[in-house]
View 1 (cartoon, rainbow, N blue to C red):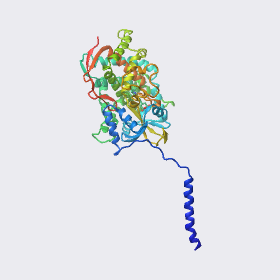
View 2: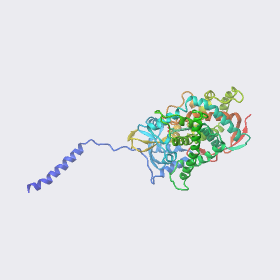
View 3: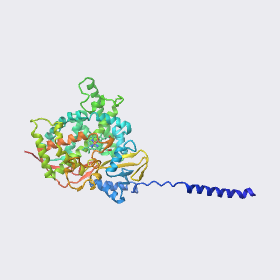
View 4: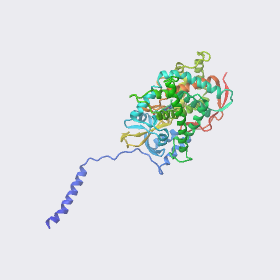
Length: 476
Ligand code: HEM
């Protein structure tokens, strides 16, 4: 009987002791997650993003949320994923300098599936090793070699597609130019029929590359996949032919990136598998073609409305042209003299970033600015909002190329090419392509916009909605 009455008393004592221990335990603060909403249904925030994308004001989406939550970090849904947006120079620095430590490059699954194994779908040591291999091609000597080729292809393009015309759609014409140039420089393709076949497939490929990866007939993704297969088939033939030419010594190991990747191994001497060489060619076209086209078209649009800037660019280009013999091609040294022109191009890219930003994934749980970011969370850094933040770029709506004089904008406030280990590997290539085009355009033509107020939308790079029709006249 005594034992029976003791049991509830002991149980009560145990509960009290456990409760006391619980009270003594140090409190673990619940994680502070970024403010914001993933939306309901999940896509609702993305719709706001899409609205800004089609209004050509993607920075507005980011800036509105930043002021709503009074924070440079907020959460939302983009591309169907829960995402944390990290804004401003400090965030750019944090993300760029933590690659492979706390974060890694992330692309939507449609991109990864369509690209296959190549630089953009790799991370960590694998990506570092591939990038090293690419960078050894994009070295100063190679760039010095290719400026003349870029000039030759550009002159040929202007002669064929611009001369004698009184009107053309700049965007579509420039797309042809940058694609032919990429084919020539990356793979030495000069046959217009092969270029035009590849271009048709490639433009179909682009339609489904960022979107829902729904692999059923009649979707953009399905068509994109078929187009990527056709490109790979063409490139396979070219790579095989190149191997034979290299063996017979009728092609040079350094003539283009294709040769470079076939011949050179990684740090351990391991050669890149053929499928990866082909995927990387597709990757380079993807990364470098639309971005350059968009920048060229923006330069034409902005400078048409800024006669005082245009005049100074023309004066600089004339000085350089005056020192050249008739028919002599541009050289690397000439580009170094185009300082004012490059400042003007840089200001164009500040005002409308050709790439609005990009994505990362958290590799581990980490805390940033007091907010907990869980492992696996997708992250976005935004070039367009940093470029138009008045704290770093006063009078941010005024075109002012002098911002780039001297040491230029403060670190991480101007990031059109990204930063850190995943920074654009085509920066110098793009600089040469843009400056050489500008030089030849100004030497030969005057132009005016048919629709001076034509809207620019992000799709996903900035493009003019009507293809930027221009009226053309030869320059005396
Ligand atoms: C005005 C023209 C261009 C702009 C604005 C631009 C911008 C960018 C940006 C912002 C990134 C970084 C993306 C990130 O951090 O996630 C990037 C990466 C890349 N770009 Fe460019 N790019 C341009 C031209 C080119 C060209 C011409 C090429 C090819 C020669 C190229 C090849 C690449 C590649 C391969 C990557 C991926 C690098 C990696 O994942 O490590 N880009 N580009």
